Image: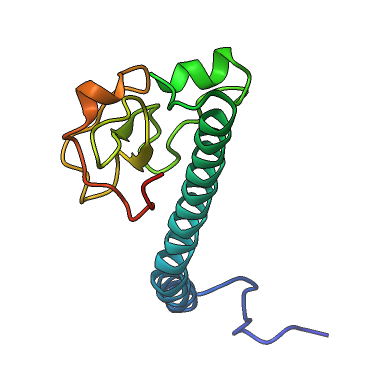
Length: 144
C-alpha cells in the first residue's frame, strides 16, 4: 500500500499562531488595566486602615496624657503603636502631620497621607506637628 503523494504535516500554521497571539493580546488589553486597578484599590484600602490605626493611637494618647504626641515616633516609644507604618501608595514612611485647628494644643492632631494630591507638602514621620502644621488642612476631625 502506497501513501498518497500529498500528505498533511502535523503542527500549526503561521496564520493559526498569529490568530492565537492576537486573541491573547486582546485579552491582556482587557484584563491588565482591571488587574492594576484592583492593586491600586488594595493599596488605598491598606492606607485607609493605617490612617485609622494611627488616628486611634493619637486619640488614645490624648486620652491618657491630656496632650497630643510631639511626634509620631512618640507613639511608638510609648507603645501606642508597634511602628509607624509605611504609606502603601507611595511606599515611603512620610505622612503629613496636621496640628490642632485651634492652635492651642501642640502636637500631632491628625494625619494625612503624603501621597494624596491634596497634601501640600510631605513631612517626615519624625517631624513635630508645629513644623508640619501648615502642611495640610485638618481632615474633618472635631476639635477636642
